[in-house]
Length: 473
Image (cartoon, rainbow, N blue to C red; front, side, top):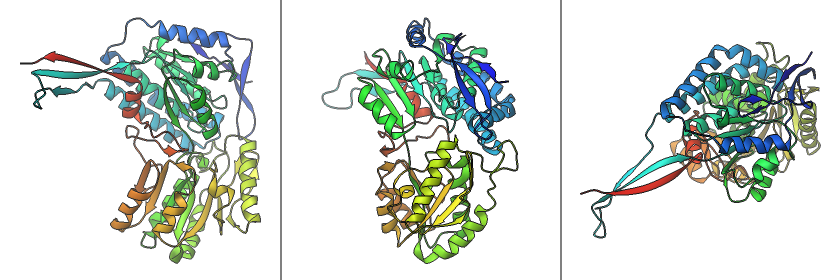
């Protein structure tokens, strides 16, 4: 029987006779029901947040985040199983995700303790005076976070941790497909001292929850991670407020002829198949210099065969499901379309429900759908490039600009990639998605507005800078 979970209004569980159903993507079993919010609940959540009384001290914010981190670590396996049940991701990935979320909470706690002000002496020019200018950061009155299904715990932690560190009240609207780990994290925060007014977790129809939150003038920041279409809709409708939009990606792994072949093959497999390929920074295109394409392809197919798909609850499984069967169907169709254009499937391609085998495709035309658009799944299209100039031109040809990886031992080529690739991150001899949870992260073009996330940058977005000056003889 499905378990009952609750949305939360300022720390209190919402009672409702309407529910959001949550299904296991692997077996399509109904695993949980979450109480659904109304537009009234949304307005009440806004008012509760704006009515927050005394602010938490830096140490109190640190304590809440650090205690929650320790509680999450103690429940690592149960959280991992919860994510696996709602997202279909294999346990190898969900255990890793819980570890990353713990890092987010730790870095957020550390930042909560830091003095973030600056000091400017004013006697530094002929026009100056004997004064000093000081800055301090003040929390926003209210932020809204809308999170996706692909990292249902870590993406939530990346919104909530910095907000709490900054002292900013926040309303979270998680994905209806994967709300359970988000709700459980909120409960840990409440249990470890977070005032209810600092956080509401609302689940419900777009017209009742997401749209009112985005449109409300009292909301000072909307932080959204998700699709390009929804992100651009938010940008058009949100009005006069801060926006942090982390949207799609079509990230390449560029492999040059001087690359370490073993490393290149490893990075291609990890980048394309981890998290079932459902990462904005996953390797979506493998661009291999023509002179080594045959050797790379042979080695890549051999290693990719080890990335077994199957029951996400088994530790032997390396690739679980995508989020649902319609998503798997779209990915299969993208493969069929590429084959119709002359591509060849070298490995995988089979599908059973939402379970799609890791798929290696070669001879993929540059105008194929899976090359020009984001394929959110375990697809690995191989494309030949003549040289770095050709790879850069192909990489920059799509509307996306999130991240990239380049495998080379040539420093000149590496620096050329850093200078000329039009994206937010360039990783040399690493997958496009490599980062730590406190480093700046974000894209340009259709991947985002160039505003960075990561714990430190997110805290900046969750605050405003106040400047004041004093006489200083």
